[in-house]
Amino acid sequence: YAEESINLACKWAYKDVSEGVTLA
Image 1 (tube, one colour):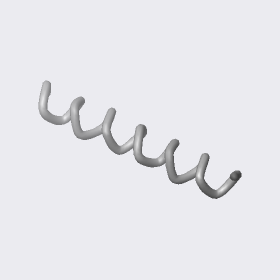
Image 2 (cartoon, rainbow, N blue to C red; image 1 turned 135 degrees about the vertical axis):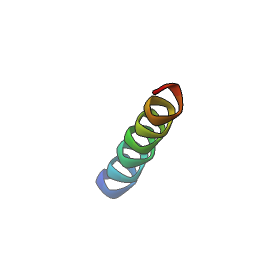
Image 3 (cartoon, rainbow, N blue to C red; image 1 turned 45 degrees about the horizontal axis):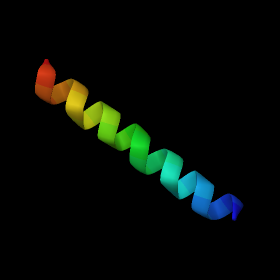
Image 4 (tube, rainbow, N blue to C red; image 1 turned 60 degrees about the vertical axis):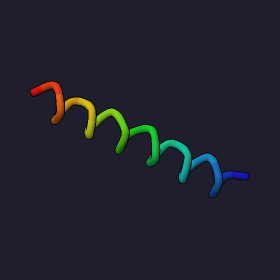
């Protein structure tokens, strides 16, 4: 469960970074 949570967190973080770069 912990590993899945970490993977999900990384996925959301990467998504936020990608959108931030796109908006910038």
